[in-house]
Amino acid sequence: MHTRTEGIVLKEMRFKETSKILTIYSRKHGKIHVMARGAYRPKSQLIANTQHFSYNNYYLYKGRNFYYINQAEIIDSFYSIRENLNRLMYGSYLLELTEVSNLEEEANEKLFLLLRKGLMVLSQLDRDFLKFVLAYELKYISFLGYRPFLDKCVSCGNENPIKISFNIELGGIVCSECLKNGYLEYMDSNMYNAMRVLLYTPLDKLDCLKIPKDTLFKLHEIMIKYILNKIDRKEFRTLNMIKSMKGNGGIQYE
Image 1 (cartoon, rainbow, N blue to C red):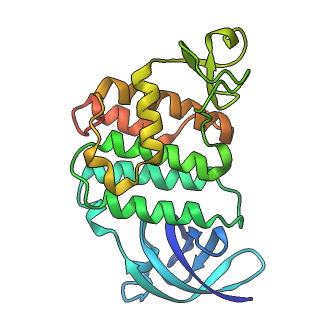
Image 2: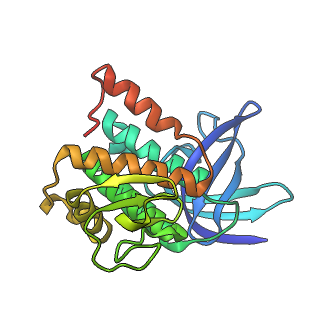
């Protein structure tokens, strides 16, 4: 089967001496594994098309175990992400999030377009990385099918709760009458309002939002727990690296 699709390289792995096995998130087929023969050869025409973050038009054919690249045309290398340590680490998190939370060959065009937009915005970002990542996470988990329920208590339907918490398992806010059961995280009004506005504000319009750093930190911790719960994982490798580098003064975790 021959196919043409846009795709973004999430992961690369050497195969034998000169080839690569790529994990690509494609617009048409979702996450796929692609063999790039000869990509490590010095004069290979596939060098630029097979690196992390690289966004390409791919012409593929499907074999028994892999797709194979017939031809690739680069659209954007997102090279500026690699030039800045903060962009590189947060960009790597976006790639890991996409790679670990999607089954093979399950297309989701909204997730593809979000990843593309996220990399475009990140490639120009110099500050407010945590605000960007939190807004991205909220949109990502929503497009994955788990949009946080914020309009009323997800348990009893109370539309005007005074005190609220976020129920990780149910995926939404719960009122003070529904706090007995479940995996709960405390939320104050600042966190609630920030979650709502970040969920609906486009990634390239975040500059206008002023959100306290402590609110961003607390919300991010909730979102990580929520995402990990929904995709059935224990941790994100890149976030562990970011926290470690922050402790050594090497990255802006804010």
